[in-house]
Image (cartoon, helix red, strand yellow):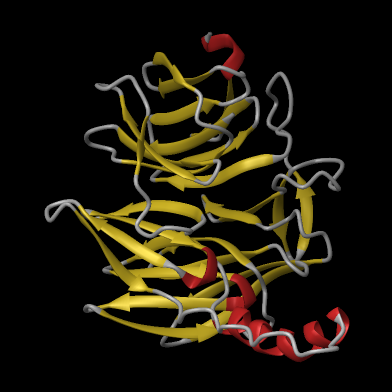
Amino acid sequence: MYALPVTDTLVLAIDDSEDEDWVFHFVEFDPTAHHSYRTPHGGQVLAMTVNPKSHAAWIVAAGQLYASSREMEIAVPLPLPVEGMVPFDVTLIGDRYYVCGNASNIWYYDVPREEWVPLVVPEPRPELPPRQGGETAESYTRRTSPRMYDHARRFPDMYRAFPVGQESYFCGALGRVIRLKDGATDEQWLETGARLVHGFDEDGAAVLCGDDPVAGIYRGTIDEGFEQLFQDDNPALHLTARHGGTRYIGAGLDPDHEGPCLFTLEDGELAPVETGCEREPEHLTHLKVTGSVLWATDLEGIFRLKDGRWRLTEIADLA
């Protein structure tokens, strides 16, 4: 299951565990209600964005892009902006759907203009010279790999787009951070070279979450630089949110992680969270704040913290 908190009172969850169908659940709170429908299966969901007004969703799954909504009740495939692009994220910012992908590809779909627009695209991959007569495969690889390696280093994969105030940020592998401001882009590369797989706005600053080579969480801006808030040798511990003055740390979908998956960070030390629900959170897909609510979603359910009380909604109960 992939569950995305949209507002204080709405979560869109897609059950992608069945073989034939996706099952969409628009789960509402205060009061509790849900609207569900089935649509042909599109593969394991990797990323999703939801328009909070129209409840239209764009989804990345199995290397493809899809659109669906409560009104449509069906998921339809959408064309990617460029052939051969591997998408990792789709995010709605204003009236643009940003898609981040391999080799530093960042495109956006301009809804009013109904067209894809490139924001960041890589240079063409270098053409490899022909293999010389008598040259062994090992020698040929040794001769040509530096050029390919250099291209990969200059154009790493990009994993996430997110708004920070009136600006848009993008983060990816090798610590690369790109900002879109007033129609122009600038960038910074974190010295740690962390693979930045997630980011979000926190009080006008960008929070960046890395999971390789270790878990690392950073906060700052392109102008002021980034400070490291947290580091742990366990790369699973790369999710974070701040709620009610408390910093929370979550363990993502890492099969090597065992034990509690949700913590508070107090004086540099992790303290496991006890929600008091029927079960505790397992490996998290999201740890997110919307207004006055903290959400922690795992593969089976939705944990919601509001007014000091945790509440669990199991997706199996919505069937």
